[in-house]
Image (tube, rainbow, N blue to C red; front, side):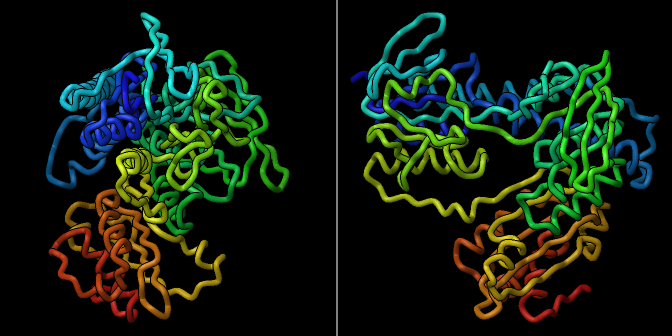
Length: 464
């Protein structure tokens, strides 16, 4: 065999799996369809969207809060071209970093489409076509944006998140189909730059995968940016008309809404991507949703082939894919790793940010489990007042009998970083009182975490 391990796909799951395999002494190769490594996350997902979010937040601060801070400037102007250029440079730096890590760990890189010839042989179709053999394979080919069957994406006016990262102008009116994480993040970018934003969501709330209180808090904040929400609406038609897009939707009460904008972002989720792999040549099975079927070891029905990340069941998150990449590498090496899927956090990188881990209140109600709730608002924090970031709250859910923390939900400044404390607490089965009795530096946003724990313990927060 040419290799002990071949990884197909170089996103966060794939390249992390390759690195861990190499660290464990396996001769490793990675195959990437595109010219650059890093997959969706580094190239057209997590990293570029965060770069634009950060730029738009700076602009919004310059326009709205600099004066209050005592910073007098001329009225700022949006230079979208420079924002896109800076985003591209951030992407380049990250992609180059992955290239370096491949060289450092002596991982062979093949650019081209990887396709199974059989379970031990992979054909790479790139500038040159070659075949490589391997003892084991890790499939990490990720996902692509989903689209409703009647919507025709022209990628100019009717776009996905990929095109939204490369616009040449700030939309006058951006219509977003889907109230999930990606739509709210990209809507936030252009809303802060001056776009009118309309969100059409089939369900009755935004970011529906999270605790309902977080959706309400974020919706309230985005309304402050001028967002309009059409919740409980089913999109029935999307048509391009010159430089405009007409979106028709029907409410759950049967009312028809027609929206006219210059751009329409279709953001209704993502689906597993296995095109071109020719899974049948290796005998690998997928379910009716296109996800590769795996067991508790992330092994497919073919004993030497594993699959990780967006292409298997579970949340489509880069850090989930990374954990699975390490898990598979260590399993193959004979170690006994574990992943607690219940404690993989979810984050929305709007401002304020939203982050959650563990059970939502809705899930606990569904289980019939007795629980306590502790909340603390950002507006009561000295640190939040100092930075003018007073939107949001921390919400902790704890078992009514044992006080064990069951869920942590944060909407507010730096929630994405703060949620790690919730993950740590829950990994070690901490009680709300454990958190409440730890010293938290003053003044910090994390004090809201302690105060929410105090509220959950004996309803005794100090500062409200």
